[in-house]
Length: 101
Image 1: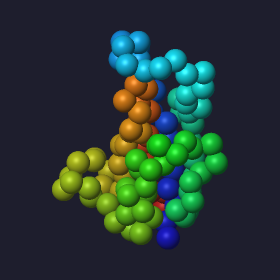
Image 2: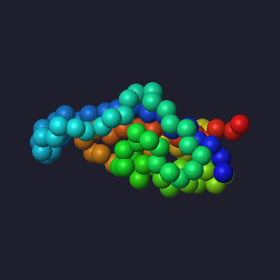
Image 3: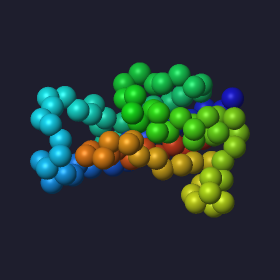
Image 4: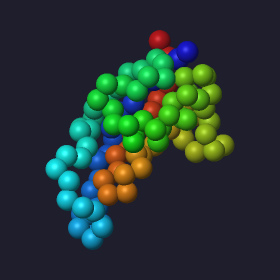
């Protein structure tokens, strides 16, 4: 299997949607801009939230197995993907790239 680096590239909050639809919650996301995770298997990295991991897992699996070129040329680097978690109030965008040693 290959090794991947996952980098937090953007953290967004839609305060208008949160105010209108979300119940008040005390704790949300622990991701930090620029935070990196190195993985070489299908185990969720420590500190990664479940929602984000589930969103990116199909892409992670394909990249770890040597595949890529998602959607016929979507990414400039065919061995990468830009994936966001599925939190509609505060999505976090992750850049996933294969790291060749």
